[in-house]
Length: 132
Image (cartoon, rainbow, N blue to C red):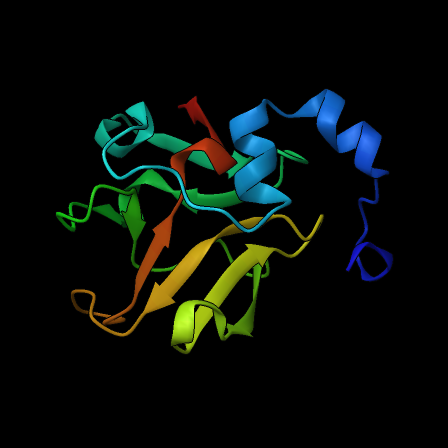
């Protein structure tokens, strides 16, 4: 996975950079508990960026309340994320990861509001927030 990204770190470097929860989510493809992250309630203008490499991922103007317990967005900053097919847990989903470092961010679903009808359901621990 690491060889195809601009930002490449060893496993030990990731463990030093990230908290244990961030590491479990971002490098282990885990999921934080719903409702457990303060970024789910963040409403200020600003930018959500990858906690692993700092790449801007989502603008706050694209964030909406999905009721799922995770920060949800209509669409990402252009070119900031990539997707892969996730067949874990006996289902098929579309995984979202950072296009710059490959860190797992969450999943995207086709049940969001207009105009895109997409719901990027993102683990809050995988992001940092910078207020405008």
